[in-house]
Image 1 (cartoon, helix red, strand yellow):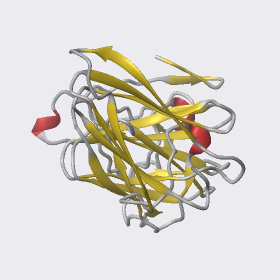
Image 2 (cartoon, one colour):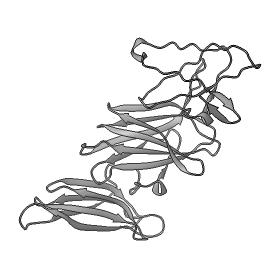
Image 3 (cartoon, helix red, strand yellow):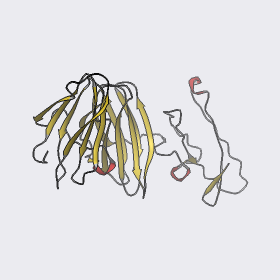
Image 4 (cartoon, one colour):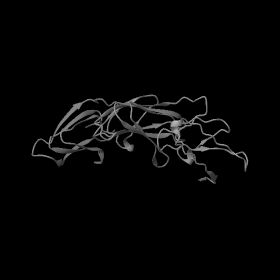
Length: 273
């Protein structure tokens, strides 16, 4: 499969044989891999090789669950299919570049459980929106020397979004779209755009660690949200002078009655409980 000739691949496993499917890069490393259950059908759209090299498809038998018979049926058709961006992009190193406000359309499924994207937008306030035809998950990673997961959001309905995400000084973020376990396949559209600046002080992600704590502006109220059970919001409260008494008040709906407030003092650069 060459770069200038993208193709759509349809694989149907035989009724008695599991098929192992691997898409290899020019270096013979698996750029995509998965198992196809007996009798299952999977489609890989817009397979295209990198600028230098080509892709190789390798099929091998898995567990046989019946007598002898057809191991698989393979159809290769020219054209990108339902993916607007080329595959494989299953690894951070193969992440596809996104442009602000330009939607990217893709598909995930048994042989394509994750799609990676990257965006360079130093110091920008961003909104991230995912619309999917089935359940899935949205992950946001940043690269501050080491690639690290900063947010995972399960998308139960047709849409999931992160309304405000502040990119770091280096500006590169990675976004992964993942298929939910048990879902056969899904199509999606992901868009990263500039977020509007709210008129009132509003919490901005990521602030889930002390080093990214949002600075509170004195007595001004800050509006925020905890979207996940594992979500944590950090704030830095400036105290003008030593020994001054500070009052912290939280107002939340009754449904959020299980909120936990921890207070830390800052000793050097290390928060102490």
